[in-house]
Image 1 (tube, helix red, strand yellow):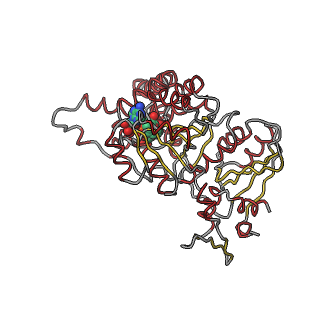
Image 2 (spheres, helix red, strand yellow):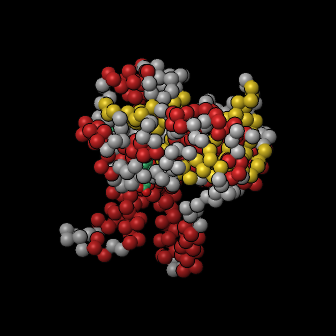
Image 3 (cartoon, helix red, strand yellow):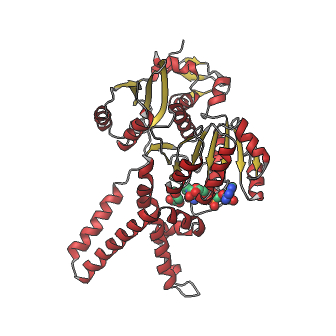
Length: 429
Ligand SMILES: NC(=O)C1=CN([C@@H]2O[C@H](COP(=O)(O)OP(=O)(O)OC[C@H]3O[C@@H](n4cnc5c(N)ncnc54)[C@H](O)[C@@H]3O)[C@@H](O)[C@H]2O)C=CC1
Ligand SMILES: O=C(O)C(=O)Cc1ccc(O)cc1
């Protein structure tokens, strides 16, 4: 019954997710499952198919242009306005069909658009540009959702606190994907397919806004991981920022030993290339990232230095056992990295959680789910009566559902789990 209600209510992001999982969308826009034909409420779904109808992407470089392109590829009807300081970039974005309109930051049309039409602002510039846009959003009394793609959260969180008006809902974001390329020339509309996209909701996040942003990100086929915003920078220092600096060190080392004819570099095999690809990234961008995450990065680099010393100490001591153990630890850890998961279409689980008299349920629950390794395919909020709603999550067959259940109960939630059957989706009144 609940499922049937949701089809009618036109929660199209969820619908879209399920179209991919369960059925075939025919050319006429109808959805077929097991002989039953579901009439898709085209206009209603089109309006909200990616959670937002009108999106402003600020910074049309590698990440911003790829995001704009991904949105247009997923739903060309979503209105995308791009903003950049580089005029040829603006022209390219429009030429490629990744932005309907492209504006310079000082264009008065931008302020008008933000004030009247825009529902979501995505900041995809280097961190140094953030303050100006937060001031502009404040000047326009922007009252929509603001997110970002910036690799560090220290500065942007401080700036949001100081500069953003209370009418905005700021939900920090960070796609854990990219490349060593820079600018719109390196952008690809499929860059985010299958990748993890961090979102950092908190107790002030409006549940429906998070739901819409989740729809947008899953709509471009990325997977959302919720992470407390105060944990973000330390976590990414270990898996992204220290590795970048280590790749830069490897290239420094090789360059120090290479002559003009590059004869040493020609000996480099695949392993060297794999471990150093990211070192080709923009020094300016990475310097900004490093200085915005200086403390965690310094600690990570010091730890890295002591790990390197463990190898050289074992060598110096002639301790083969210790040396092998260090390599074994690394090899085991690398082999147990999670492989790309192909979710099973017949093993979905619905989790229903009452949201009565408690702020921050969406942030808390999605963070608990992400920490248990569970992947939330879709989110819905069923409003039962005023002030009384149920949060309903559809999980794919990943992660530790036992841990999820225990952690939710320990956090004081009353939770019900039920397997979601394909047949349920064919039931529409
Ligand atoms: N490069 C990567 O692999 C990843 C980068 N990020 C983050 O995403 C953000 C963007 O990075 P990229 O796209 O790689 O950089 P990029 O250098 O490719 O693009 C940045 C774009 O922002 C524009 N820009 C600079 N200042 C501006 C301003 N004041 N107003 C409007 N536009 C401005 C530039 O002209 C350029 O088009 C950064 O904060 C970065 O930390 C996040 C994930 C991956
Ligand atoms: O190119 C790669 O493999 C990356 O790891 C890209 C990347 C760069 C910066 C980020 O904040 C996140 C991801």
